[in-house]
Every structure is written in C-alpha cells, then in structure tokens.
Length: 414
Image (cartoon, rainbow, N blue to C red; front, side, top):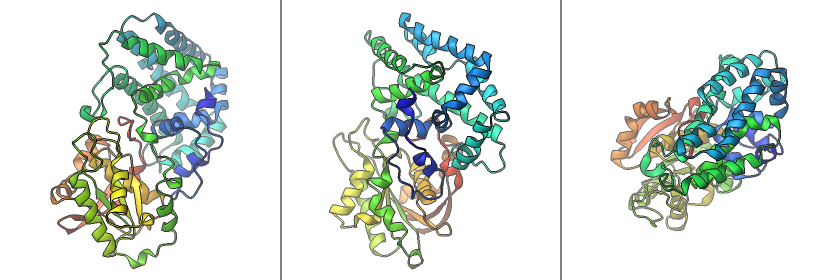
C-alpha cells in the first residue's frame, strides 16, 4: 500500500509549503498521489513517514486492537447484502475517529519524529488554516480529524449517493438501486484489500476506498493536468521571475469564465466575451499575466476543461502569447476561481505588495463584491481582500493566507 501512495521524495510536498513553486514537481508518481495530497495532506505526510505509524501501533495496544477490528469489519463486508452495510464497513466509525484523534494528538509530545514532521511540513503548509500561534498538537488534531471525516464524506457521496454541495455537477455516477451496484462496491473492496499487506496498512483502508471511489466515478479532477508548473503553466511560470512588475499597475488579471450549458460545447459565448475583456486589458498593459480559471464542470461530466478552452481561445483567436497565460483547471465555482488564483499569487512568486484584478460581466463582478458571505458558508473563510472597482467589469483584489486552506467537502477541488 505504501508503494502506491509513497513518493520517491518529499520534493513536491515541500514545494507546496513555500511561497514559490520553484522546486521540480515531477516526484509525484501518479494522479492518485495528487488526489491524496490535495485532499488529505496530514494523512499523506504520515504515508511518507511509515515509521511514525509503526511506532504508534507497537506502543499503543488499544489502537492496534482497534485497527485490527476495523480491518476485520472491512474484510467481512464480503457478506454485506445491502448498501448501508457496505458503507459502515468502508468508513471510520465515530468511536474510531475520536480515539485516533485523541491518540495522535497525545503522541505529538512523545514522538520526536512526528513533532518534526508537523513543525517542518504540516504547519508551514497552512493547509488546515493559518498556523501562526497554534500549538502543533491542536493543529494536528484538527488536521487528522478533518482528513478522516472527509474520507467518510467521499464514501457517503460516491458510494452512498448522498447529495454533494452542488448535486447538478458533482453527484455520483451510478444508480445505487441497480442490483448490480453492490458488485461494483465489492470490486472496490477487493482492490483495496489487495493493497493491505502489513498491519499498519489497515490504517489506510478508508483512505484507499475513498480514492478508489473517486476514480471509478471519474472524479479525479483534483489531479488533472498536474503538475501545472511543468505542463500548462510552465512558460508563464518561468516568465514571472523575469518580469518587471513595476511597469504594470497590477500583477495579474483573473478572468472569470461562464460554463457552457450545451454538452459538447468547448467554450460558451460568455467565456469568449470575457476572454476578449482579458485580452484588451493585457494589451493595454494593465497586467503582465492573465489567469483563466475553471475546471471540468458544466454541463454534468463534460469532457472539456474550461480554463484550457479559454487559454486556447486567447492564444489562437486573440493572439495572447502563451507565456502570459496561467491556468487554474480545477475551480468549480466563483468562490474557488478567486481562491485558486489567490493560491497562484501566493505560491508562484508574485509581488506581495501589488493588487491583482478580476474581470467578468457587470453582474458577475457585482456578485464578487458581495461574495464574502458565500465564501464563509462554502469555504469557511474569505480567501481574498477586495480593493476598488476599477470599472464596471474590473475589480481589485489581493490574496489572503487563508486561501491555502483545504476545503474538505469539495474533493474535486479541495
């Protein structure tokens, strides 16, 4: 199991913790690595340090016994006759979740290796909220509980057909009432059990089940086109360090998309018009870079990634050079358009003292100005600070460090 999740080095994880992404990110071996790291970073880091988990199981007999019983329950799911039985076998129980959270938290003060991992990797990531002034024990407790609850949520949605936040675009791909459906879940179970070879591997049965369910539902969106800075964003990323930002009023321009409503349509009329707005601003010298943001979202299970199609339109129709275009191919909502671009501003080496701008239709920019409450409801934080309204269709913003926080109930773009 560790071989499936383990990366040959920590370079890519470490890259996520720095203000720039200058490190090479090819160390991720598979899309599964990206899905796990983006959704469950604390658990992912434990996978990189298997000796920490091995010590825990050797020294904490109650945890070892609990994990053994959990694995027995998982294996016994072969006899399940209904969906609820399968779901309970797959998930962390409330008692398991509580005990593991408590035990992991207590071990921070006694396991030097665990504490070092937290201080050098997890806390600097800011992935579970700003970490300044937060004790390592409290931060890790929040992280490990969030990971386990997020795995359970994926199982509820993508095995149990619970409604996600946006059912029209993110729902399960299968009819759970089909008599053949339990057979699919049994195949998932068998695949996971094949990767459980050591006693400590049983800690990861729920993780592997959640990731496998995302895969069979064709929902590995979090991994698509990664690593961006070595692929679609390579030329623009390399241009950032060579850019004299003092020559521009703004650091970059985020242009918001408009997802197609017709299946098979690569780019919507709104997407074309907003791309034209962005190109005008770019050629007028407002900002040296354009970010186009939008994932594989509209309509349901479309094959097109909005940011890719907007980039193509900018280059082929409007003649914007590739080295001026960055893409965010993951965002599924206006909130995450802003959040993911804030992450780019924080990680890619943009100047911290300069505003960026966002452009869209008048109605859309009006909505962005009033979007803080929606961000609090959906993300739990506001990932940006707004500046002035430059025009009817352009608004200033700066990133906040909160933008690096994982959103645990949006596994396609956490």
